[in-house]
Length: 131
Image (cartoon, rainbow, N blue to C red; front, side, top):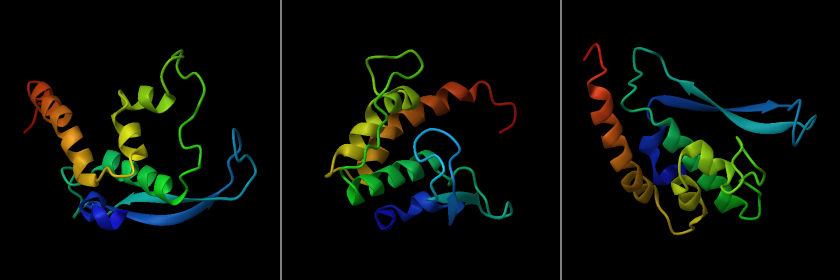
């Protein structure tokens, strides 16, 4: 899946890691994961690093590899009873629907996110002290 959007890895390095959760599901089990490391600050460019897209891609990879895995928590979250927790955390159903759509591509997610990102850039412009 990363091969479909290698630009989403810009500005970071992924390293494998292992850990034992101390609460919730998988408590006490050795689990594998990834650490996201920002590369040397001399080369880091916050305009290139896209963590939201990177983790969207990780969810998409997991969904493709294990379609039966219960990726989305199915319990009330933050006093919200009618929407999945991921939709509350993400602000809409956009991410979840993209991940769950087997035909959706990274370019599709870029197109979906671009409008919100442009609106945010315009809204924050007046608050920037340094340009």
